[in-house]
Structure formats: structure tokens, C-alpha cells
Image 1 (cartoon, rainbow, N blue to C red):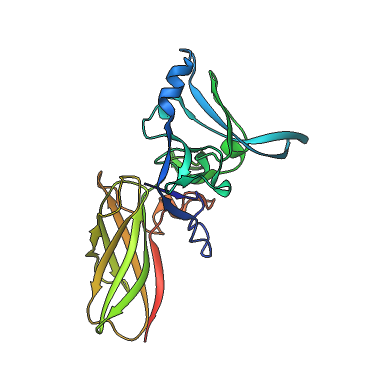
Image 2: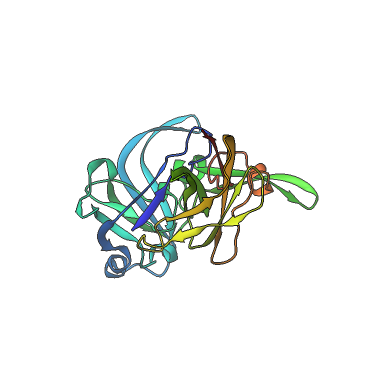
Length: 267
């Protein structure tokens, strides 16, 4: 069970559904790399997809296939799967059939679809989806000066979001989800009030799948309200607020894992 999220999810107010969870089936990647006999000088593994296009690079039009890379050490992670099944059935074509990469713990861009080639290199790999696109730019303070620092979108980041408010027998409950890292807890805030701990449903299988949480909302009043959630992972990292420098000084919409607020109306 693995939750895949687009690296740009929540990067814009209107883009909030670039995420999904499924049961993926296939064969582990690491044994195949070992069987192939990777040479000692190999440092990076490149995954090539069948989708292609023409890119303009340095004023030249060049044909390129979709490609992403990870280090050899990351590729040997036993959780990586060459996937050919989804939810117990053959992998559908829109999801990458015949074979795709499932790189657990990474944003969706790294989970290459329509896989047709795996290549081990002894130098760093660069390409549109590593160096020119899916690049996060942040302003950082270095020796008293502000610099723009660029990094390629990589591992999934901790995130949580309120999903809906339910009502039963006159009682209100807030429910939502948390994902992106092993979740230790979730707190919820209503209208800027105190943070309260939510209960986490651990029924979802696998440490790479999202967890659902819920919290009772006593004395809910009619009118509009703002609900915000923040998750904490097992290493005590807390989901940052939107005014946190990690989010506020980010100049691109990739890797937007600031606290998510929802506006709701109670009748």
C-alpha cells in the first residue's frame, strides 16, 4: 500500500487532488540490479519512460524521453518495486502499464511510468525533469546575504489536510488524512484557537500509505469557520505553517507542504 502525491499538490489553491493510494504489485528492483551486476563505479540509476517529446535546450531542438534518476544506494532500497499490478489487477495503461517504477517515499515524479529502460551511470544525470523542471527554488540566508537555492524535487514531505466535517445526532466531527512520512500524531485547530490532538485510524496497511484521523468538534456554531491541521512525524518534525520561512521563501509551487486550511460553513 503506497500513497503517491504529485510534487505540486497544494502548490496552488485550486490544485488539491493530485494524490491517491493503491495496492501495488510487482517484483523488487534491488535483486534485478544485483543480478545484472552493477559495476563498482556506478553511482546513479536512470529510469526511462516511453513518453517522449522535443525539448528546446540551449536554442537547440532535441528529442528526449521522460527520465528521472536516483542514487544507486536509493535504488537498492528493498521497498522499490517494478510494478505490473494495481489493486490486484493488471496495471492500467494510464497508470504506467506494462511496467512502472514504484519508489516508495518519493514524490510522484520519481515513480516513472511506461518504463522501458533502466540505466546505471558513473556520472550524475541531468535532464528536464531533474534540472530544468520539477525544481524547487528557495531564498536562503547565507552569511548575511539572500541567495536563491535550487533543488530537484525528491522525497515526499510530511503533510496533513482536513477533508470534511460530518454531523450525526447533532454532533460534529472533523476528519482528514496525513501522509508523506511515518506519522506520529495530528493536531487540529479551529478558527485560530488552541491545537487539539486528533485520533489516528491505523487500519491502512503499510508505512507508506496515508493515515486517516478524526476529532470531535463540540459546541460548533453556525457560520463560516477555518479548520487547519498539522502532522508530526516519528522524528518530531512538525508540519510548517504557511508563514514558516521554508514555505514563505519558496518561489516555486513544488514541495508545498505547509499547513492546509479548509473553509467550511455550518448551517
